[in-house]
Length: 452
Ligand code: PFF
Image (tube, rainbow, N blue to C red; front, side, top):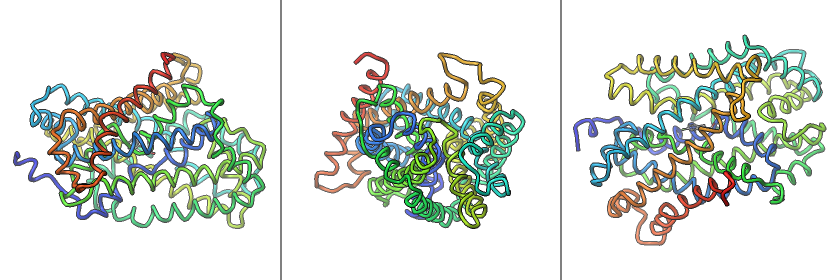
């Protein structure tokens, strides 16, 4: 083991790791993206496919990615290189790390734009405009906001500054301590919104839409989106869990922590869906309206509650917070690599990475207004970057992690790291990681691209 690996920082406890990993997993993906994708791809069948992907592909890969990180104890690129040397495999495995750095970078570029929407709503919802607002008015308000290139770039810039400010100070410390309170607060808020939705008059229809699977409605594209969403929401396939795993003390159970994080992530997504679809049906809205879904439905609920502006503000503050803990994870692999390899200080590395990301993100910010007609393969910049990263790069990165952990790394090593005992748990994980996860991803790709 090199000195660098010994000196590498560690989490203070298992809870600290779980908090950081949940912070990375729970974000806009759960509250913003999951509901709008479920709406776009027809509801129940998408949700069932998503849940299957989380259980059969996501959780085993999450375990594998954490395992590789803890074994390598460096940034993803150097971890992959060291582990490949250890296994006497090709040094080309380091490109898995590169793929991840690139994916995280690209995701953050548009993630910051959407997080900017949540930030803007913290202030906007606090106005008389929103009292008793109806569906048509929230729609008009959102359209006006989205079509202003100035607003879009200002909020995107503010969010990116906040991210860089936090990342440059190091990930633990304030952020870690704050998640301890804010994550449970977000959960409580979702419970309150679910209760509201139950009494909104659309609960039955919303519930059925979300959970009744009509597989005739599910296209190959929908299956691909469900799988991509599983990777996106769990924060897998791009090395951020690998980085977090690299800070994990060796006595902590990787499998148990991963199961906990994946369950919490899934519960939050389903609760967001249950808060939103009843409102969609109660107010005659369109479930497939796309990325604006939460920004056009939730304000109706806040507008009707007593002191709704306060609840609305608190809600969007919590969404902002969930987004920033994910943004930090998205940029961390790039920052870790820049500081390890180019000898930059943490501050410089965060600043450069953030600036580059901000620049690319302008493309997404403008894709909602002045560049809405600029399309490649029929997709705007935002849609294309999202499709490339979530649906292609993350699953590909995940499969490479699975193949490495299942086929390249020696069995004795993964068995010793996971410490799953003599029972069936280790053999079950091994079957999932060697066969089920890679073949599952391959089948979804083939199906989506019309080969199956
Ligand atoms: N999981 C985050 C979300 O659901 O919003 C997004 C994300 C974070 C994706 C970290 C990938 C990642 F590595």
